[in-house]
Image 1 (cartoon, one colour):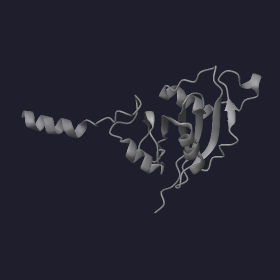
Image 2 (image 1 turned 90 degrees about the vertical axis):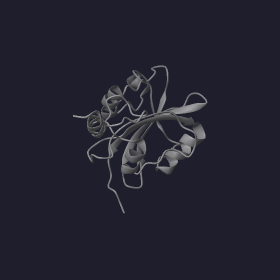
Image 3 (image 1 turned 60 degrees about the vertical axis):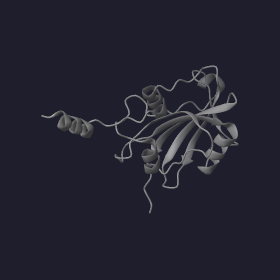
Image 4 (image 1 turned 30 degrees about the vertical axis):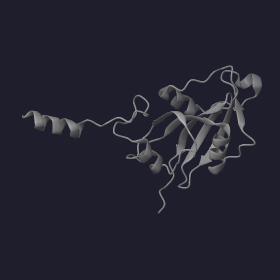
Length: 164
């Protein structure tokens, strides 16, 4: 086989990895395509430390997304997805019974372990269980409200249906 043919063949079989994808994410997925499949838009502000795991190609795939953004932007983003930001549930890792916290849903616990999301036991997080996109995709959201920017962790619990 010629070097050109090998190069072309190699280009067809190797999926280019989006640098924002978490390790172990499906190859060849671009964040923009995955967000479109879930009818989710990023906040209209500067986001940092963006990471995702998900696929636009498989309907059964879940989306895990994390980012950091200014508080007012995060609050507007959550409100735009039907979340009552004035009444979050609270969760402190490892102290659920002591504080009568909501606790982290078991499904999100296993997902956060897989994605490498680390939660500080010294922090009380805000927990939202019903962020919804226009297509009906539903997310559980954990927010670290401490600091000049907020860290957001989102995990889909329902894909929803494309409407068109």
